[in-house]
Amino acid sequence: MEQIVNLHIEKLQEGVYLATSDEIPGLVAQGRTITETLEIARDVAKKLFEAQTERKDSPKLKKVGKSFDYPLVVGG
Image 1 (tube, rainbow, N blue to C red):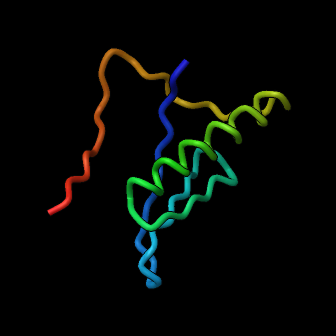
Image 2 (image 1 turned 135 degrees about the horizontal axis):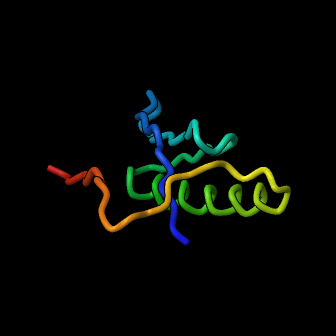
């Protein structure tokens, strides 16, 4: 079952990107590009969600429905 996790992504002064989420405590991912950061964040979110589910402490996330909005980042 796929679920939606909202991420906050910011570019740090060091030139790397940092992703965090209010919905999954402990989710922190850092990468050289937005794409790399999203890939790492997806892996971290999956592992945290699985661990929280085992403890019966899983976050209440929105299930992916028939449609949803997704911001697409395109290089210029």
